[in-house]
Image (cartoon, rainbow, N blue to C red; front, side):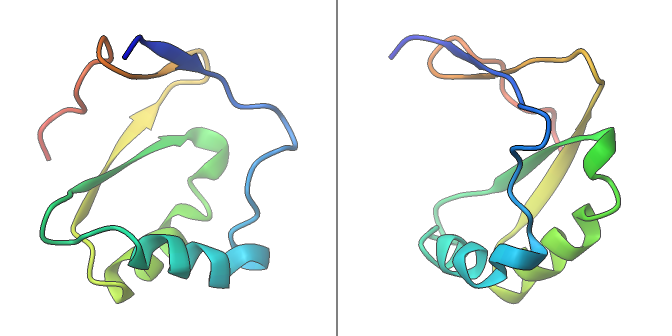
Length: 86
């Protein structure tokens, strides 16, 4: 698996309030006994982040977060850095 860079697109994010049912279903699909979820959060999403946390907790997930600066890029794949310890 190669490393990919993920960049947010302004105005194309997922409106959590409008998609709560889909988000709950997605969280239910994650095996809580096998995964620890890390939310990587940009400053423009801080206001909605507590709501996201409450949904994740309701679904039984353990989670942490990693705040991102405006210019920081997300990476995924084999070459991506692991999130910091929580």
